Length: 349
Image: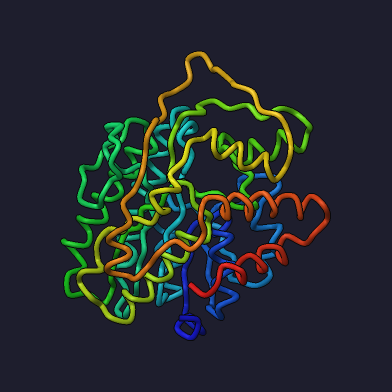
């Protein structure tokens, strides 16, 4: 697969975010010509800066809500592959800023899809949404790609609407087109270099770094935890096969998540983290806290059958790699070196 990426023009939206930075680093290592389009990094520190990515890729600042800027980027890059990660991706923030969340996630994606209509070359497009696109009924079974879309909070609902926009554009404008579009729904992603607000791993790391107990809001909540490299390998595999084969079966939605046994509670995640970085934990009841799903899992049978994609790291491996990244960097290790070492350990996508 490495040979495929060598010299490919790849447009990554949201490259300054956590997942986007890991993806951009991996693509540069694979020899791709990486072009980014995103707002400036939204956290301090920011993984994008820690990895020194501005020096090794085409770093374009722009707002996905600006249709003209998106169109200009697509026309300038003339991409072979587009990996669309730009999003407002925080559930709790979506309650505070619902209009911005809908504008970024839905209208921003529509701007990209509309700009891609100008391309007259083969281009594989992977639109990244989320495991939260499904109408969550707190079922014990994992969700399949054909299950009903929905969403209680603005983030989840906006991503479900994004899936509808992708399906509409694909049917209305891209049938028979050299532009091939799929969507990817990933589980709860963790990994080194995530500094976002209201996410469990950054909250754990910040608490332990200050010598404080780790506060747990929803210890019994169940999530499909996976290391960031897992879904990224899925996105890369899907994009490559879209480009190489043009198989219509690929122009659809795919779940990327962990093995069923690795769908664990928040409490399990905290305990595993504390086994790598000793500390204390405490319950944190929050009066009037916004609704968040209690039980969520994904079926990844389709990715396995169609793409021959399987997760490589189990739950303990995932937590170990994540916490070790933070501890090494806190100890003075170079974040780029640590990240490249973990990519090497994970293997070729």
